[in-house]
Image: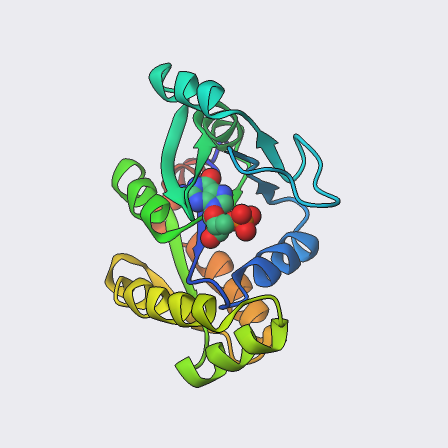
Length: 202
Ligand code: 5GP
């Protein structure tokens, strides 16, 4: 059975906890491949080139854009981020599922280019809780918290472009909901036409 892999996109505003949900889903489903993005931002402590990101200069990044190497690309917090095209298509063709954690602009581009993708919007349960989470991190100034909150409002207004929404009120339950979405999507008839035909012809 030669079935195409599933392309899963996880997105959401900063402070929604999407990164944690993404990493946990990958731990529980090791067969799902992680997409390694390219970025022009500097590596943070502990980040390894080729594992967390491919860290590139702006010049190198622009060359990659010119060569048509990206599936999608966006500018987030004044740095470029993009998904390299070739490794994703190679994995999908091999029947492997691939999952991305990208911003809402990137998610929109993916849905346009690849409508069979599954896009999941992870959001904080309320603005009040988002504000509490941002304050609890203790890393942002009052100004930055205000900016992130207003940014989250405009991000949340984009919910209609997604296939699914997960209110991240409780981490474990959010992980379970994402896993259920993936399982249900893999069972869609249109993704299983060939397997069904082979079955009926056997
Ligand atoms: P960070 O710098 O904290 O790792 O990521 C910042 C933001 O960039 C996050 O919202 C993350 O989802 C987004 N991001 C990471 N990789 C990509 C990518 O390849 N494409 C797009 N469009 N956004 C990305």
